[in-house]
Image (cartoon, rainbow, N blue to C red):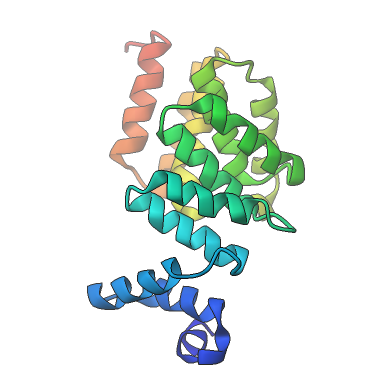
Length: 205
């Protein structure tokens, strides 16, 4: 279906996004990115979100945020765009600005996995109470339909473990990351996160 959309001039914004997602050669990708970035502010929210993601990756963070806000304020809003926007503030060292964006997405969809993990990361950075985050993380865990997307799974597991450890349950945090390694495969990121939590919990052995 994506191949058909990419080749169909009548597919509009969907065709442009499909072409970007399917592009493999550098020249094809540059052309597809240029087409997406040339979209007017009145184009579809999905197009605005993808354009915002591209601009942020290119280092044009403020321009990217502008596009993401258009998608986040659409009717209905794109919750993924709210999370992308929150992530730009987390990456910029401003968890205070990020948290309300994630919380707005959670208000609309309480088990939105990226919103829940982003809110947990922001609260951890701000040293806020974590009871709410633990409940949200457990709700995502309990809902098979809310499983984090593959590219966010490692981040989700690390955030969950950090919340457990911050609430004093280092053993459960370590166990969580050991189980994640079994499901996702051993990785330096998981092992480093587990080691850090164990050190913070003074479990030196």
